[in-house]
Every structure is written in C-alpha cells, then in structure tokens.
Amino acid sequence: MKRIKSISAILVMACLCFIMSACANSGNTESNKSESVAENSTSQSDTKKNSNSSDDNKIESVSENKDESQLSEDTKKTGTDVLVVYFSATGTTKGVAEKLADVTDADIYEIIPAEPYTEADLNWHDSDSRTTHEQDDKSVRPGIASDKLSLDSYTTIYVGYPIWWGEEPRIMDTFVESYDFAGKTMIPFCTSGGSGIGSSGDNLRDNAGSGNWLEGARLNANVSESELQEWINSLK
Picture: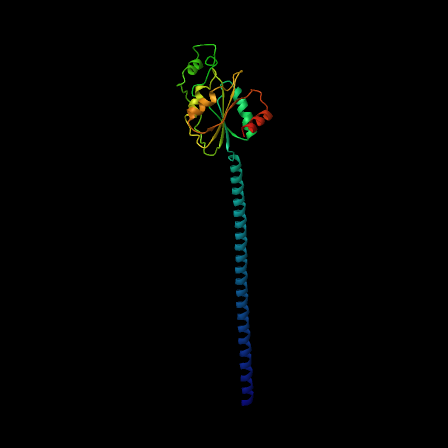
C-alpha cells in the first residue's frame, strides 16, 4: 500500500512539472510574439520616417532648383551693360533709338519732359514759340519727369535727340548735368531734317563734365539695322 502511494506521488509530481513547463513555454512564446510585434512596429516606423525624410529631401531639391532657375532668369534680364537714352518730341528719334537698342541688346530710357511740348511749342517758324525761346537762352533747363536712373551697371551709353536750331534741345543739357558719367563711354547721336550733329555733342560733353565722349553722328529716321551696326563698328 505504501508503495502504491509512493508511485502516485511520483506521478502527481511529474504532472505538475509538465504543466509548469508548458506554462513557461507559453509565456515565452507570448513574450516573443510581443517583442516581434514591437520590433516590426519600430521597423515600420523607421521606414516611414526614412520615406518622409526622402520626400522632404526631394521637395527641398526641387525648391532649390526652382530658386536657382529663377535667379538665372533674373540675371539674364539685367545683364546688359549698354544703355540707350533718348529724347523725342515727335517720335522720330524714338524710332531710331529703339532700333539701336535692338542692335546693341541695350536697355532703353526715355527722357520725358515735365511739361510736354505741343505742336505750337515746336513751331520753329514762330519767333515767340517755346522752343525758340529755349534755344535762344543757353541757360534754360527744362524739367524732366522720368524716374531717376541708376547708371552703375552701364559702361556704354548712347544719347539720342533731335537737332533744334542747330543744337541739342536744352532738356538734354538738363539730363547730362544730372548725372556722373565717370568711367562711361558716351556716344551722342541725333536726328534732323537735314542738319548735322554740329556742336551738340561737344556741348553735351562740356555740360556733363564727366565721361569719355566719342564723336557722334546724325542718323536717318529710316536707318537700317545693318547701317546701325556698321556705324557701331566704326566707333571701335
């Protein structure tokens, strides 16, 4: 009887060990599952972060390329070092100045009088007209309504105007006395019904007091681009 009880006790102990071992393995399995899920979650999170970082880099790269492209375009628009300045009361000098700006790939600037000239003002047959009085008095300086210029980026400046009474209009004297042309190459040109440039270029040079003034020329109203290029080449 004692032997049977001993065997029973051994069997009970064996069962208990088996059950405890199974529970332990189950716990480890669950723990491993939890750790695996956590690791997968962390891996997915890192992958998502890396993906977002990659997208951010792409956006920054596109943005930088766009900024560089825009900067390049802006630079192209302001890259010229040549300027054509003109005053035109009837449109003749304007037409020549625009052709010259096209040929030289230059910026262009119009001298606009603060008090516009009327047809009566321009009547050279009238000894009492406004322009007659202005041209008779070398000290007259008509006002200019155009915005102030910055000449810093220009090295060559063409200066165009009509010939009035054999000389430059007095508003041209106003212009040249308003700026410092030091270090600039100044090239006068004029339009007229038949008169040459006369002493107008020298007058502008003297009144400006600065700049390297080249000998100017009279240009026909219907001057061609090839003729303008030939004249420009002769200046060099």
